[in-house]
Length: 99
Image (tube, rainbow, N blue to C red; front, side):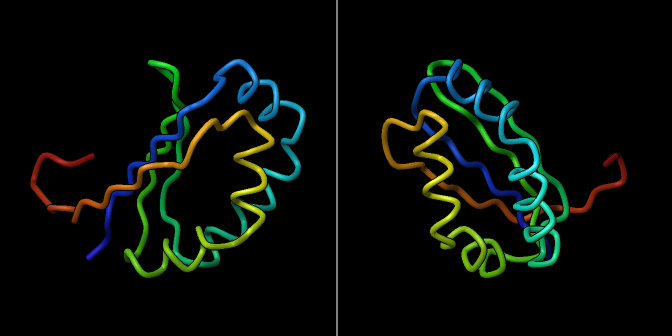
């Protein structure tokens, strides 16, 4: 059963947006490694002085193995993170109305 992963990273959202634009090739590489490790879906959002990441992964363990890569922490710091992320996991419930 897959999991939804919600990551909240406090920080400078303007700096994050600028970093995302200037490091798009690096982000594409990270995304490809994530897909190979078990990522099914991935989106960024911003609000309330934090960057929100909403992912779907094959398993919690697959995400944790990927997220422990030092490049991820370095990229977050470079992109304006001002503190450690919070990470929450939710088991997906397959329902008839899902899309």
